[in-house]
Image (cartoon, rainbow, N blue to C red; front, side, top):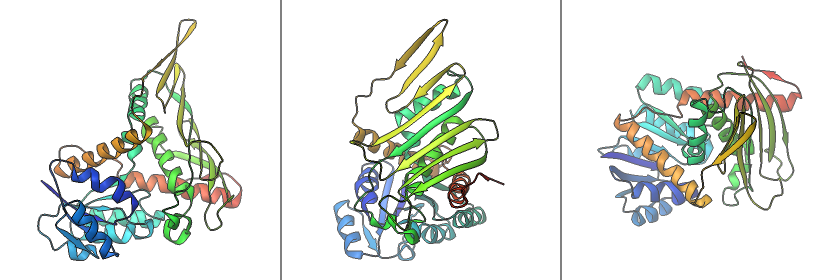
Length: 332
């Protein structure tokens, strides 16, 4: 039985983490922590969690704690993760790992000192269409991939207004959605290091943070990826996509489709998706959290590691620098 503490009782914990973990076998939710103790107590009662605290320090006195899940606003990620790590607990922290590259590097240093693992929440890796695309790329079904177009366009969540506060979020849509798109590209394509970036950001309906961003990532391998993400593009529905182009064919997600050349003809195959977008979303989180629990047990390796988070944040900060200075930024 893996003993868990959840820190942060906001929307993502209420809608995803608590119901998912409460229904998961082999898991014991020991405590919910939130500065709003009344909210923590209500949720603890609802999900039959035995304890509710204002702070993680109080909860860490409980016996049987193996890991801590950090689902607070981003400004608290680093401080909460450090407390858990210093206590020798494994950590799952929702994306983005922290507000800045410096904060992520501090977490890595501390985790190495205390011999614990940190997993950053990148649930899209566990979507069935993303898994199918990665498998196709890994098997060489579309040949070496040289170009990728990917993006995520959706309206900003009205129940998370802190995300438009740079002090709390660390940035706008680029750190909210864009970092997930960047992670998807690097996870699926395995292109290696990004050599340079060119980016632009937009402020259509927000002031302190950007609500739109586009970027070109140039990899040392010669591959190129374009990223677009927005809270403000006016669309009838959300858009989440990744188009990968290789020498022998192409692959697409949402829905998954594979296109290949056979002789002189082009053949297209797809996997029918019978689940709703909400089902896909919830299933990806459930699979992700199950993987984390199994990694804490030592059954599977930890994925979406703090080392990868550093790499992703280095790219994000380079995109911001490119937008500010209006030029290509080479990543050292």
